[in-house]
Length: 97
Image (cartoon, rainbow, N blue to C red; front, top):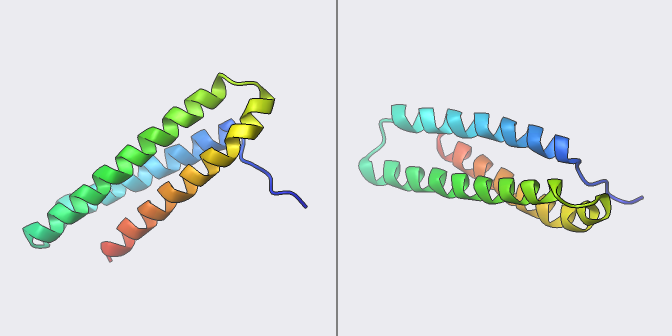
């Protein structure tokens, strides 16, 4: 059985969900009473996540301009980028616990 790649619509919906998670993390960071070194580290992590998110959005935008065949070819790269973004968001959320 082959693994099904997400559709463009699903990727866009997942990006919106990730945006909400990033916003939650940002709000928690602003309310966090940690020392400045930890706050700076967490702020940098959120900045890295935002950069990854922007890169993923660029890939998805590129997919919109491709044919269905190209989408299949590029979909694996997008899935890898998505997995990295999701992992980074989870790690950041875990640090706020």
